[in-house]
Figure: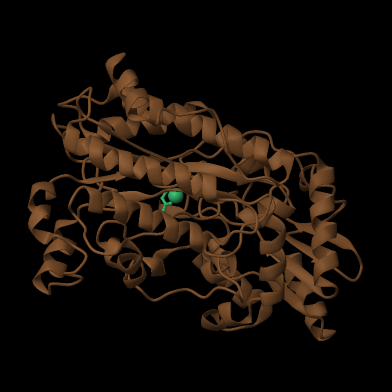
Length: 463
Ligand code: GLY
Ligand code: MN
């Protein structure tokens, strides 16, 4: 948690943006796995963390914009709780860490909200993404559960996105901590991979690195020999000589900022030449995309440039053909690169996507495409200094997609289907770093993680 001034200042800035009414921020509650006392690891709501900073369940906050006050609603711990869970600070002590002096019991929030409603005050809240908070908001506000999202405050969504999008120097320090733990996870995967080891063993090792550094995986680990499946969460395969391992995983820092890194490396100690060819196209695309990411540039344009670099590289290898600009504008490259170049990152790995992907990634000047591949671009709008985002191009050989398109002879002027049979079991390659948009360009966050073929082979050979 930062110093209390950070939270006081963040709330003051939000109040200024919203102008009047009250802002309701429900924190998250414990989420049971299979019975009440056996729950998933607790993860606080990120907007609650941003404005209040307290990383524990069963709290809610109300910012009264007109009065300029914040109240924290929560219950002091009973002796039963203390017997099972150990000594706990009081709610007043917890609140003071966030610069909040007014505390009330958790259920007192109902009365406070009823009074506000009786005075016709505007109650701003964010769209909930968890069933528990949906039900709570429904009960507290008297709005049917299935209408809660329709009544979320667009004004608050936009104000929160504007504020949380610009990372401050103290946030960048936290994000770099997360990226550095993520880098250690990747080094561990590169050090332990070998023919005969199971994906599950590697997953256990990298998750252990995150946790032993007081972090927690920022999202479900992707660690697979089937990198062509973009979000592969299966860990049952055994690594075999000749295969590639795609690892897309990252850690939260202890203060819950995320890292999101991808590396791809051979199960053997060196890449074979077919792997090197594809790897170097992805690497060139990643490096040139980072160079092109600067304030004032639309990330949509960086994405399209990345798609062209990929199409050019594949054309050089004889897998694509024709005019590269036309191939990309028609969407033919998406056979190999079917996802977006990146997304915002911060307290969430896909930062603030709970508030609406189109609010965070798009605006009045740029609309989301419906074209296969491009429709999956999560961030398209102009970049600003202070944005933290991922750059994660990839090339994949997805047999099911190749077969489908080949059957229909789709984009036959741009794709050499006859050459693709040699790549059916190739898998996929993705390379991903996390960058900060600065006044003059961009900066890769965290310590360098092996990325060139030489760097990756050097670490694979140092075992
Ligand atoms: N790291 C997974 C993703 O960005 O979707
Ligand atoms: Mn990512």
